[in-house]
Length: 162
Picture (spheres, one colour):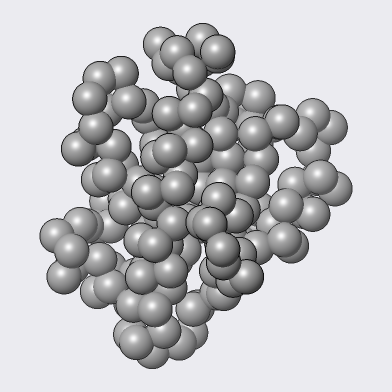
């Protein structure tokens, strides 16, 4: 059992495409849960992000059909404090995991790939759609949506959330 109230954080490269979409999708999923899970904070950051950038236009478009918005999103660079305070961290690729291990002194135990908990899948990475067409962003979104139930189950398995 854990007694932690830190956020669940999603990590990508620049925090303008994948991780902001994952943040919104996971927050939406938690809104359907009972307390205390509904109250879990959700955030996103990038391992190479420039602070203050808006989400990419196609990320905005990819979330519109599911009723979610990134209009207020601003990118932020991952920090040691974010890592230290997180309940769990989910990365898009193995490279993101590797960069966290290289860039930070303390790496949390609950550092995972977003798709690693999906039973029976070989596709555990979420490729970067940056610069791609809307269809690539929608495919990225759908890959994340497929992972959400397994992430909710993982967070539930952590036990007591305060």
